[in-house]
Every structure is written in structure tokens, then in C-alpha cells.
Length: 172
Image (cartoon, rainbow, N blue to C red):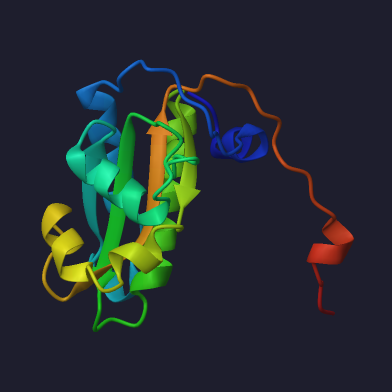
């Protein structure tokens, strides 16, 4: 098992996956990693809906996002985790961000690739919100916040670089 800092320093967002399915035990481990994320006031309000690539809702969302199907929004990953949060709790978006990062880091530790996705927000929270809430089993009073696609990578990618001096201000 890697250390968290090793994973942070070597991980990257993966946008190409093999057709190998993710084992049920690994999927459950990823879900638990998301659920173990800290939440504001310990509300534990984040809900996770998991869909496989062959779930019909994936194609429906895809058609809404990109009718000509020129781009696959989840990059053909075998698993997609949809995180939603309570509408009446102002910290749900932050909590979902923490949970999705836990899933992202756990996936890397388990030899999977992943990419965090927000592109379907306008579809899942738009005029067909009630329809997609039902299809994704998003609880009443909750809204989609962020998703993450995961699977066995079919590509290698270097971690991104950054400019420390441009991105950081150290106050004295």
C-alpha cells in the first residue's frame, strides 16, 4: 500500500479505460472511502449513486450532454459514482468535494484510474432533474454535485505540474 503523499504526487486524471470490470469488493471499498470523508458538523449528508457503464441512464445522460455522441462524458469508464448532497445544507458541495477526493485517492491506491466530472451538472440539475433524480436514486431534497469515473487505466499519464510561486501566497 502506498502512502497518501506518494499517491498525491503520482496520480493523474485518467481519461481512457480498459474494458476490464471493477470487482464488486473494490467498488465497495471506493464507496466506503467516500462515505468516510469528513463532513461539516458531521452531517454525513452525502449520497452516492453508482452506475456501471452499461446502465441505461449513462446513455440517456450522454445523449442529453452530447447528442451527436462525439465525446463520451465518462470516457467509457466501467464505474461512475454520482455524489449528491442535501439542498438545505450550505456545506454539501464542500463535503461532496472531500468525498470525491477520497474516492479518487483510494482508486489510485487500488491500481485504478479516475477522473472527477462536473460536466453533467446542467443536465442533472436542469429541467429533467426529477427524472434523473429518480433514475440515479438521488434522495428527495438532494441535488447532484459531482461525479467521478473509475476503472482500470488503458493509458499512462504524468501528474500535472504547477507553479508554486504563482499559485501560493505565504503570509507573514
